[in-house]
Image 1 (cartoon, protein in one colour):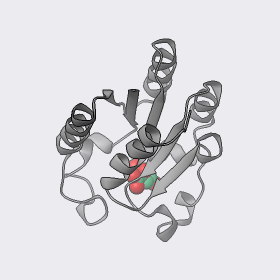
Image 2 (cartoon, rainbow, N blue to C red):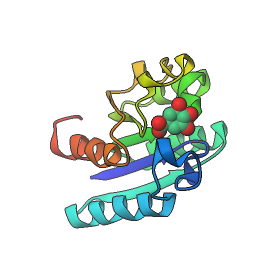
Image 3 (cartoon, protein in one colour):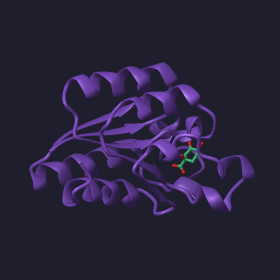
Length: 145
Ligand code: DQA
């Protein structure tokens, strides 16, 4: 299966930013964990990160044109206010799982709202970096398509 894992702003700072919330594993650890998993299971995976809203939108559109079959996205703070990213996610008929490393519902009220979740297939919240792997499992093991 052809998969894309996307991360939004500041997720390249994993292992540096707010370790009590996001843990001590860094972004490179996340990428290698996902690449090893995809390789072991025989899936084609691209892992992408951008601090820019437009960068994420461009990648989604590019992935659509290149035939992506499943997307895992942690939009970071864009989750809470980016209508442009929501519209981009809504544009493509590909299963999309939204992931949050932290339990956003236990945190500040502004994090309780996701403008992107309603246009995603489902959401994994608060399970740390394992959430990405679980989201990949859903896409590859179910009839999500
Ligand atoms: C996050 C939660 C967001 O509220 C925050 O802005 C992030 C990370 C998470 O993975 O828990 O950057 O998406």
